[in-house]
Length: 526
Image 1 (cartoon, rainbow, N blue to C red):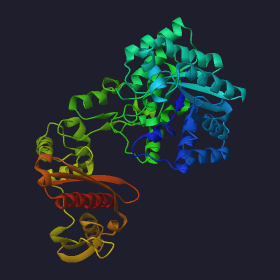
Image 2 (tube, rainbow, N blue to C red):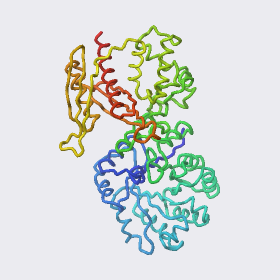
Image 3 (spheres, rainbow, N blue to C red):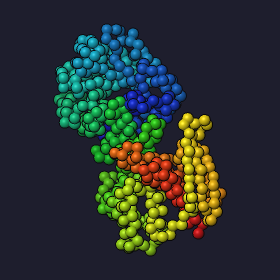
């Protein structure tokens, strides 16, 4: 039987303090429901005294039924020198009408005397009276010992005295906070081990920030030393450098350390939930995030790829599907024959890996990547490259010329006009289209011209567009790489273009996008 570690998610409160994140009430409800589905034990949903949005959330969330998670409201101990029942913040905390509350209190003597400007004795009373008051109202109370590790290193006796006061007052759990994120794992080990083994503290939690890049390591170390609750946020979002990344913590606890965290049958949803929360948070997912990142199981080196295809454990520490991720074999100059052969053989089954055709394709690939092309995110362009090198590619049209005019300021909602002249099977087609910028205008003009000849074109459209400067030392004359994602509503494909001219690079990717669609449609019709 696995030992249980309680997962306390603070995405909706601590995560909301990250730069660039502003959750609406609707956003918070969506994320809370997803966390409940995952089986997170606690959802810290906000601080009712800090803003009206959090209070609105607590009112609306009463209409919902959470099956697995406890909703928690966050607040602080009473202010200095007032009665606990008169404290405005505690009154607001109680208005959330949830059974579990978390309150933070000072454990660092410096913060007590220099920041909140009170005495060490009064701070102890603030902690004790606040917890006793909330317990008298039948609340589950989680005490966050703010700046505990800095406090311990500054004044060990006082920091321990504060959490002892919290325990004696009836706190259900005490969370040790590395609020400034500057503690290292060896210090976590020494301090937490002392509290657990020598002072016999139970029901301890850990709350780490990532300012030293060690939040996950510190949290795992604390669990090894006897902590049974880990606080953090999904994807590690939070103020400054962020909080403990719960996606990484959950996966490590479950698969590496044999602890039980969320619902076992939901572990394969870890990647999906991570990306869902990124989407709702309006942040770009970290492709290199352990376990759930798009590149977490991506292989590019030729020898690595060959080994993984023989036995995945050769270069993967666990199967990607256990966390709902997938393996990616990347197309590049270093990926080797084992990577490109499936694409070559998709086009011509008779070509072998040691053939002259294969060598020629590899040499062309290396040459183009040296020029700035990148095919690992644009496999469709690589497939067209293979067809060209094999001499079986037949272009669907010939460009005579295009012209793009941009207006600034624009007198209409469109800032650019593209005219295009094409030749298709001996027939000239000239057309023009306005768009929101030169690339959009070119895209629309190209598809308008070709739709006269090819019906499938009318169903395709661009679904994503990325630009990367690849020679930044040359300022505005730098070479750029454009990757375009296109779809016809059924399938999706990616193409690439490179040039010193961003419009030319975009045009190159656009042409490949169209040619890939038409080439595959012709193959299907054969």
